Image 1 (tube, rainbow, N blue to C red):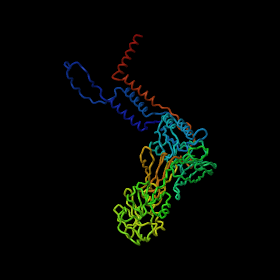
Image 2 (cartoon, rainbow, N blue to C red):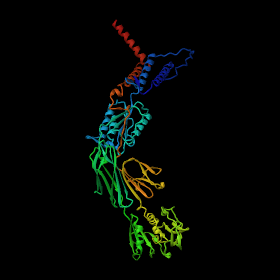
Image 3 (cartoon, rainbow, N blue to C red):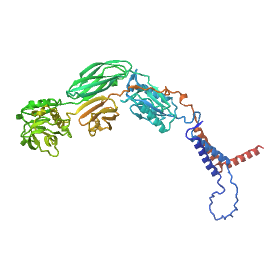
Image 4 (cartoon, helix red, strand yellow):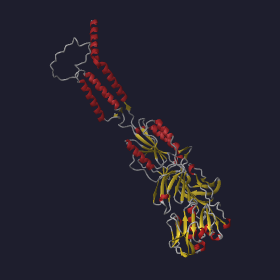
Length: 637
């Protein structure tokens, strides 16, 4: 016998309080009663009787006893007295339903998710009706679906609506959440039940502090071999070539051999037969030359139980070369300089054919000053002093190139010093101008961030000793990058899975330039994702499939998070973990609720007291019964 709603001390305190109030009411003096009359004219004041002290006594002890018994019965009904079982047999369980990406794998005619739903329903139906269950969907995150719920229909609906996600299972986090939920609710006698195959993301084990745990394992153990990730980047030597690598993981116990095929825009782009040993990972590389934008698809042509990781697809951006129009009477001097840059398409024209409206991203004027300046960004090499776009100071002979200004982007990476220049113009810089190089404090290479942008050389690098220096092509590359930064942005495209992502960056990057954007069609410039920078690594978390862009000053990394994240390890359950659907004798001893009978008896007792003793009904009833008995006796005699 047990009490569910109240403790024994609480029940006794309530009984004592109610009994005291009832006894006090029965001890009140009822001799003075209110009498309603027509008039006080014929009434006289009665003499005040002499007060006598006497011990009060209960006039209707049977009524008091009946009311006390009725109130005790009602309090027992409120306390929910139960016959059989033990105190606190109602238990609160946490059901961890595996909804990781691996649950979409097929096992026979059904998926692992179908099998897990069946096990979840069987477990819920095996519990006593008084037990409550919280359903939690466990994948990369532990997501509660219901509160502690005793309505079986609501639980079955929540189970039926559970579907596989794109993330791998993090079982430690799920158990930690379940334990916290039980402590917060005070449910220390319920079970934590995990339903799934036990394929986890990390090689961690369950915390030994978690007790009262059960594992309902799905029976299927499907073989699988699929694409783990895919990455692409431009080749350093040729901007038109994409270097492609595909990582294939074999999760099964047997070797896997199948062709890996590439398609770009629906057309075949490469194929290779790959053999991956059991439990191993293998990388396959391809080269594909294109400057056009389009969709690149990698497909691993295998027939296994988990087809979702057999296909990876990414979108390649277009890479159009920078059109540079060069007006020079000696084009051979600049051809080697511009040809060293794979991102540049140089077109050489005679100065006589100059056109200020010519279609070009950058115009280079070699020892030539046109009557009308170009409308595009321009680089002026040794212009006539009188027609220079930036004011000149003087012409300096045997000038020594003494300093490159690496504090701005135009002088970055330039180290050559001491080169003697036969003759050069020196310029008069304005406050906003960028000095690139000087000779004894006098600017000889200068840039003006106007619209359009202008850069000026006081000398021709290919006509001096500087033509043998590495600084010559580098300074031109810096100017072109400054004028068209989008062209020289380095692209990396990756196909991966959702979850925690770490992006390594190069040494010397600017932390202020880092942005992580989620490509959301409803937001114009994308949604900013929170991230952290640890050393040379940017870390962020993506909880749903989509495209995320990581931007720095000169680099853009695109992550197409469309591949499912399959756990690489199998959970090794401790020996204390119970398994299988519990039986009734494991869950609770059957008990009978008595509260409704106590409530009925208490109500009948109060009704009987009102009928027998309410406002003198009992005395009249007893006197009438006695008179009737005497009359019947006399007639009979």
